[in-house]
Every structure is written in structure tokens, then in C-alpha cells.
Amino acid sequence: MSETDLSRAIRASLVKAGFWVIRIQSGTAHRGRMKLAEAGTPDLYLPGLGHFEIKVPGAKPNAHQLEWHEKARRLGIRVAVVESAREAVETACRWRSEIDHERAMGWRE
Image (tube, rainbow, N blue to C red):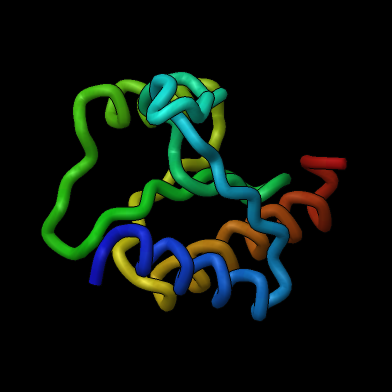
């Protein structure tokens, strides 16, 4: 399975599970198409939850991606590398649960 196919499957599963998913394009212009996000930006954004970097099993994030992930984590932004739709949905559910708990405790609006 290609990373593009995996991305489609992950997005479909997340949407089916009730998550708002935004696909992000990063990098430089390619074949006349402008890519707006900075290099290393993860593939998917789940508003209010975090970001997913999609990798086929065995593939690893590149240096720009690792740098972006570390910068985001230092700022308290959630980032996860996911290799399957199941892993993505489970991670998104865990993030949502953590946020719900923080709200219930009065730690977050």
C-alpha cells in the first residue's frame, strides 16, 4: 500500500469515527501546484486534538518532519506518527479522552 492509499484509508476511518480531519500539503511548489505548509508539517490535522504524520509500516519520518514534531511537542501540541487506520483512530480517541478529562477537571476550557 502506498502512503497516499494509506492516507485515504486513515482519513476515511477518522471521519467515520466522527473526527474532523484536514489534509495538509507541505513542502515546495511541485508541477505548478503551490504547497502552503512549511517543510516537515504533518500530513493530517485534527482541529483541537493534534497532528498525524502518516508512514507506511517500516518508513520513518525525515529530518524536517522530526524537527517539526519536536518543535510542536515543546509547545504542547500533540503529534503522532501512525502506520494504520486503526492506530490513527485509537490515538485520536485517546487524545479526545484526555481533553475531555482535562475539561472535567477544570484544567481546560
